[in-house]
Amino acid sequence: MRFLPDDDLTVAVVGFGYVGSCLAATLADRGVDVVGVDTNAALVAELTAGRCRLREDGLAELIASGLDSGRLRITTDYAAISAADVVLVTVGTPVLEDGSLADGQLRAACTELSGHIRPGQLFVFKSTVPPGTTRTIVQPILERAGMTGSVDFGLAFSPERLSEGVALRELNTFPIVVGGLDPDSVAATAEFWRRTLGVRAIPLGSLEAAEIVKLADNWWIDLNIALANELAKFCAGHDVDVLEVIEAANTIPKGSSTINILLPSVGVGGSCLTKDPWMVWRSAQQRGLDIQTVPTGREINAGMPDYTAQLALSTLAELGKDPASTTIAVLGLAFKNNTGDLRATPTQGAVAAFTKAGARVRIFDPLVDPAEAEEMFGLSLSPSLEEATRDADCLAVFALHKEFEGIDFAALPVGADCLVLDGRAYYSKEKIAVLRELGYVYRGIGRQA
Ligand SMILES: NC(=O)c1ccc[n+]([C@@H]2O[C@H](COP(=O)([O-])OP(=O)(O)OC[C@H]3O[C@@H](n4cnc5c(N)ncnc54)[C@H](O)[C@@H]3O)[C@@H](O)[C@H]2O)c1
Image (cartoon, rainbow, N blue to C red):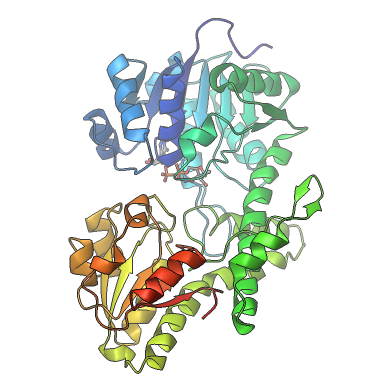
């Protein structure tokens, strides 16, 4: 059966969170008629009223222009999906303590969809899941409507692989992986991505292969960062600059590219890298396979907030400052530069370690939501960089948002011998020399003392 009409397409995006809103707004921008469906009525009301909480470059404008043009609408009403030719599902897929999928959002979405499914529709699931989920959970629930996958409707899995901060650019450029229940579902989905986003589609042999691709990507990233973090500690022990080492190490060809060691930092955060490797681990365990690289990588990365905090506290002690009577200004709370996303941010662990040592902590981040920050850190955001840094003994730079790139360190009202603790800014040697000339003490993860 052909699951994609030749004429103009109507698309439903189920789950209008971070991924769903980027995707829906991009498709609407490409001239597709899009309806977003989300069960969070407050979110739908907020977006429809023109307010977008997500700090993604260009997203608020893209959603606004979609709504204005009439090509995008957002609703809580699942009845809207009946009109769609293609239904994309991007609900949340967190994991439980034991690494297994918390499948509540996925099951609820499929149950709703089964009440509105119509013959000929193509369902494309994008949420990250353990292998087998689309076949064993999604398909049977959709078929409760009395229709059969491959016969009455198409079913595919196309993982979302964008990253926050650069999502809109990546949506228009990244190749999209497609696994399907049958060749027609694969062909229709691949054509859908080519026709709407103009990107390359990579067809795979099964739903499960596509599900695993996403997990492999994030498993690799987390483990690679763990390597970078241990390399940083190793370099620090030899008073060698880890950035210099990584840059040089990455120059030799390996496989189809070059060695590509990523960067060390205060830690790994966000909703994906902290959970997806556990999905791999748990799914392997259920088949009697003990995957050791997952817990190892996770443990190394989860230890970085404390490592970073201790680097600051020990340097303050070396400077003759009792950590218990110092003021530490944390600049950048989000887990990633140029985003306001606090989900699983490693800065929380570092702030907790500072507080435990008795330090007075101030927090500042122009991109995060103040109420969310207060709830997470138990501290109010400083109203300005000036207020945050007044008489500070340490500036812990944990995100280098664009807003922080041009900081005039000479003008900050910091205390004497103020430490700049570089947790993710990756200041260049020239910049470090300038900081030292200004009287700052500099320490970075794996950087020369
Ligand atoms: N955030 C990222 O950078 C990113 C990148 C790649 C892949 N992913 C994956 O994409 C998926 C979505 O991630 P996200 O960050 O957008 O999550 P999110 O939590 O921001 O969004 C999920 C949305 O789904 C809605 N929802 C929950 N149950 C629903 C239901 N039954 N019907 C309709 N809507 C429902 C929620 O209200 C929420 O708005 C996850 O599987 C995630 O792992 C995320």
